[in-house]
Length: 414
Image (cartoon, rainbow, N blue to C red; front, side, top):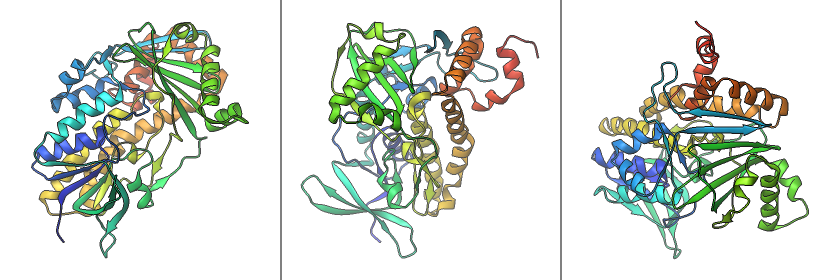
């Protein structure tokens, strides 16, 4: 079989671009397939946790990200039911913080930086815009490449030793292989908008609202990114009988007005750009590796943006998958078991974070639970620092289940 590349990567977002850079620098020929032209809008919280920064640094992208106007944020502020709890990015327990801040930057800028760096690698070939039609398989069922169509309707086949799905929550690769599954929790959707004229704060923000929450952060160019996350049923009942984005705009405006911790900040702000809708947010996969390839980033499972971990998980996954692919390629193996180290890293580092995110989300929409948690966090800043450290991706979610950690956070001696 004639090969076009050692590795084909579908999707040029952070997971795909970072993976391409790492593999190319390890000496492998990489094809990067992207359906859209960059820069392109991408509904997102637009926040990089402190644990993202070392991944940018090792690839030589951190200073360029800062130079693009990324805003430093030193923690998270949580609002709800008359309570305010603020956590800072600092060492908690045994967890050291890699940087004392995260960064906030528009996704189209962040993604363009990573893609430009990938394309600058001599061993990376960008195929864009190119839309995947279906996956190619060998007689044994192993994935050997893909069939795609370009913008003019021309068709092509690309073959590789490994084919990687880095194509987001609605992954074509995962769908084609029958790997997608869905959780039992109600489907959540995000309404994402940007504003100008909002006084920036020193932290990211979470504002609880009826049936959901706002996640917000100041980003570059004087803009403020706002995500409203609600259940499908909440969105459907509010827009029933109305059509199109007009009803969604009204729904968003009404929710902002109802949120006392947020409404005054946006009273004189101006919208910048259109309203974007993303969802359903939570996706799961039955497994993330298969003969001839793997899934990485949101394609390998996504919870929702409350904990702001999407970009971290993309970068983390790219780093571990690159190492696993490099080992497999050098051993001339393409079976799923050759990527076992990647699967293990996901079980060790990512699965607990998904579970912690679902645990935190389970309290949303339950006013008594929300009031109790916000009151507790407001009274015990060290506990808020722990929660912020977990969502900042440098503290282990397992710390939530440690009596010693709780004693320290609540001010009692162990």
